[in-house]
Structure formats: structure tokens, C-alpha cells
Length: 138
Image (tube, rainbow, N blue to C red):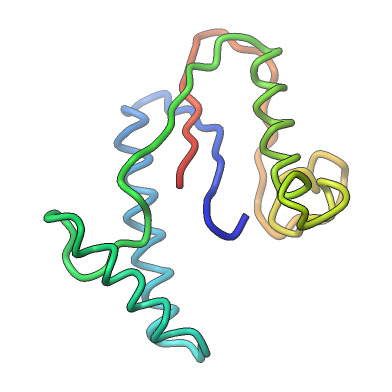
């Protein structure tokens, strides 16, 4: 999706909140740098939007790329894992972007159906030994 990301994540050694915060920080820096340095026709529009968003929060320096909130959910069963994966895969279909989930270039649905995938995907092992968190990042 062009305006948010869904992520099933597990961190055996660290607090998942720290991992998500570092992910957002790292990706925001990389994306903003690419917008500033690469040829991009919407550069001024995007940077103005991110600058406007940053003014709403004291802890932002110049730009805010990600929102500050997350929507974690405890993963408590294999059935729930499957429901969340299906929800994520069907998101572009519900939005009317594609007819079939695995047609969306940036979806892990492609990897699950054996198609080449733009993103590196680590398939979810459907065996929940200990409950974890799923983060929906927007």
C-alpha cells in the first residue's frame, strides 16, 4: 500500500517496540535522503507535507515520515497468524488496486504463491510457541 505497511515481527532478544522505532527511524532517513537527492518530480510537495506533519510534534526535527503510533496485536494462535497474513495480502484487493493479492508488486502474497517478489520475504512459520506481537505500522 502506498500509505502504510503491515508487518508481522518477532524479536527474540529485544523489545519489539525498540525494533519498530529503529526500523521507522532508519527507513525514514533513507527515504527522505532519496527524495532529496534523486530526481523526483513530487519532491517539493512531499517534503512540504512531511515538514507540515513534523510541526505537529515537538520531538520531530524537520520532517515526519511515519506517524508516531503503532497498532500491535498479540499473536495467540496459528489461526490468528493465518487471519493476519490473509488480511495483509487482501489489503490491495480491498483497496481496488489489484484484482488478485499476488498481483500487487510490493506484497508478500507473491512469495507465498511462488512468484518473484520485489521484497525479501521470510515466510511465517505457523507454529506459535510463545505469543508475540504483530505491529501494523502507519
